Amino acid sequence: MRKLHTRKRGFTLIELMIVVAIIGILAAIAIPNFLRFQLRSRVGEGKTNIAAIRTAQESYNAEYGTYVAAAAAPATGSPSNAKRIWPASPPGFNTVGWFPEGEVYYNYTVVLGTAVGPVYSVGAFSDIDADGTFNSWGYIHALPGQTTGIAGPPAGGGAVCPNTGTYNGLTTTNDLVNTTGPCSVNDGQNIF
Image (cartoon, rainbow, N blue to C red):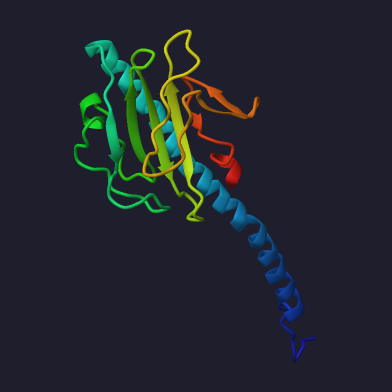
C-alpha cells in the first residue's frame, strides 16, 4: 500500500544550535593559538636574518680583514607589526652583500668596536604584536677567549643587548656571546 503523506527528515533547530555551539567553542580555542603561531613565525625572521648578517660579516672579514658597520634599516618609520620595504642599497648591509628577501618586520643595524679587538654586534628590533612592547634580538661578537664584546645597537630605539651577550634562559643573565638570541627576558617567544 502506498503512503499518501510521507514525512521528510531533516535537522531540528536544537541539533543545528548544538553544531553551531561546538564550532564556536573550537574557534574560540583555535584562533588565539593560530595568532600566537603567526607571531612566533614572525619572530623567526629576526633570528634568521641576524644569523645571516653574522655570516655575511664573517665572510667579509675573512676576505678584507675588517667588519662593516650598518645604520638602522629600513630607516623609514618606527618598527611596528607591519612589514616594511627594504631599501635598495643601505650602506653597510650592501657592502657585506646581505639583503633580505622581500619586506621585513624588523629594523636591523650593526655596531663596530675595537676596545678589545675587532668586535661587532648586530641588533634586530620590532613591535611584532603591536602592543607597545618591543621585541629585540641580538648577536654580540666576542674574540676567542673573551667574555665580552661591544653592547648591541638599539636598532630603531629598542632594547640594547649588553656587551656581555644575549639573554641565557638557563642562567637568567646576559652571558651568551657569539650566539644569536633575545636581548632580555622580555624578548622572544615567551611574550606571546
